[in-house]
Image (tube, rainbow, N blue to C red; front, side, top):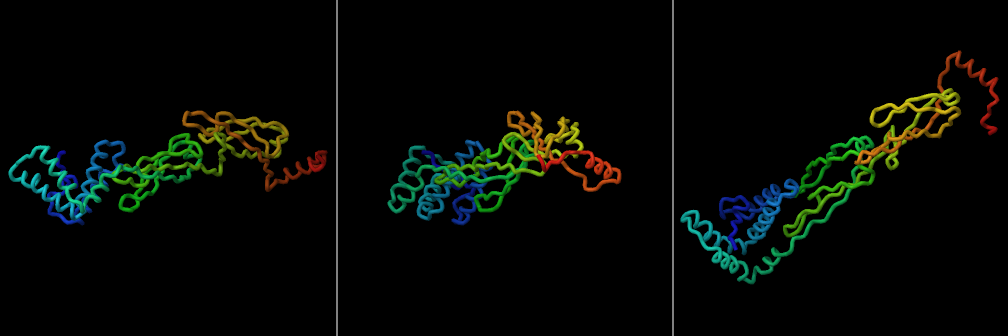
Length: 295
């Protein structure tokens, strides 16, 4: 077993340090090599194991005292004499140092516990229909190892679906015995806006028309979410509440497929009329036999 220089692991010059200085060095190194900032790094995974092991050995007075004797022999003396020891000698002394004293067996046994990954965390993130359609970068606040708020940026992919989850590695609860942190799962909630309402991949909007457009029919333009205007045909006698469907103009999937844009008709009566308009409506009232209350 190769002798490990735990002070070097914590980037300390030598063993002439206090427990508080060791803890401070540990926090600095744990933050530096934490999975949050080293996603997918095998080197960081191995380094964090050594950092945790160094912390367990050096913050216990009994194990630190015994370790320091071996450190002075293997490291301190080498700095002066450049003397090397065989791996077999170091392994035997290292084993006897930690397992030969019954008063610290329980503490050492705890350090040999299997690594346990931290629990995953699930939460929700609300976005607009436009953010889901075009994609967006959203900032959220999380707690770091020291309990302080940190801001991370979440990339929302184009065409994400309502209720879909985004996985963020290493942002869950802290692992035990050097285990990896859990992951964070964000459930996406897409909220309806003023212009559009979302159902699946279909978008619903409102098309305002005049009474004469409803009676005579005609053409009108409908605004779609991708900032284009589509001309639609209004049939004669259309009623408020009826719908006109426009294919391939709705919400989209991450594969680029589009749903329908569904325009619901709403007939709007002018609030103010000119004298000429008043006369026209009076004349229409006189000649028209239409009475909706008798239908």
